[in-house]
Length: 381
Length: 197
Image 1 (cartoon, chains in turn green, purple):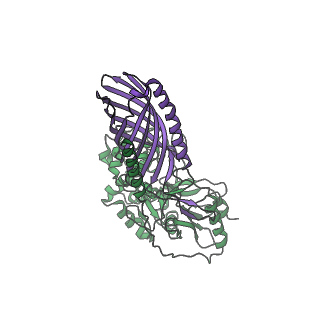
Image 2 (cartoon, helix red, strand yellow):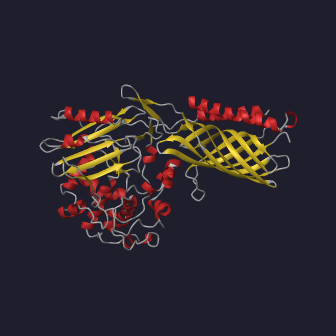
Image 3 (spheres, chains in turn yellow, cyan):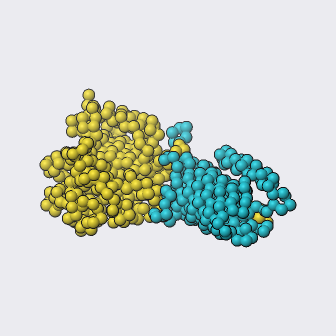
């Protein structure tokens, strides 16, 4: 009798397991637009991209290059969606991760230019709700938040509970408001150092900056982004990941270290208001933004200089300005821009003033890739 | 699949000498029958924590125990179990495992601790893909075999007929994982039924 119970239970469990279907992946429906096959260096650049995708075993990638004295080139390789074998296109929207920070920093600087915000305004004055919950909030300035020198704790990178909660219930994590993220993971945590003392990358800085923008403008971050950046620059495929878009490249990672690429898109959705890593964009939109920012079309030359200048920390060193990071290269000189890294995506946009060159490289693989070919391809011989 | 067979074989090898040891202690004519242990449990992907417990999945575990030492005040036992859990939108797991345990009685009350391992047939809800020889990708099997290390602490009450009710806190892992091990915790509520008493 006992044996019968045992095998019956086992059979039910097996049937239950086999009856559960995996997630269904929506079919993308993206019409390719731009082609760059007439570019004088199309074959050469495409070969670089093909080699990059092959050697790093990436599901897909988009590369955009702008060099002086030649038109913009963009190419794509691989797949944006492995379920439907959808080819990656040059206009495929890809999660840009922390490149969001440069957009958010630009919004802050635009508000600063209008006199609505000051770089020395304190967190306690800008967001009174954090008083008593974030230590030294009356000493943390807008400049500290923008330059990642506040000392605020970063749950995204440093709290294993945050990371496991994300895996445990991705939908719950995505539904968390910025306030909830702060309440659960940041409030009551000690600062890692006194504000301004050191550089320490923390997504919390930009989570708070998103809140400050929304409070200052009394609008959702997406509306401010649309009004001040997307519409003036004509960025039609740039948005914060709070809307469903089946054309966005799926994200993949070797999650179980078994050589397989698991679809980890659910883990890459933004929480809060998306200010620190929720941006979705295309290579051409990101290039247009970079070109406008470094071309002085978005903010004044003085503001841009301020953004590109690393905060003078008292201990250690920093190469991070106000929402602008550096890409040091002995061949190309210093590049300015930002990278974005998610579980299933990686994005980089950097402008090299010495070369008058820009690259945008987007992949839907989050476990890292070697990009040393960029020095060679961008160098003006 | 080979790993699953190896684990089943290992569980079998571990259990065989136990039964023999038990035969030596208890002559066949008065040996109690094997107990049937049944528990339901809540599961979540988490480090061991009760303070920050998250909602995850639910499961059931069924098994039995074999005794290395079976005295009135304490037991050293080997538990062999099968189980299943469903973690909505994340994964399902069907497992077989074996745990070595020590149980101490304080009258009818008892506390125990276990350590063990097993094999889990895991079905992540997110699909995976494998690269083929031409550089393209095709869908991988929806099931994976994982090693499942376990640690547990329990407390219960044994009735006069040697059946018991218990609660049990367990942590288990999925291996391999990109960060070595994906930890889970489970809180069990169950009963151990002894039909021969």
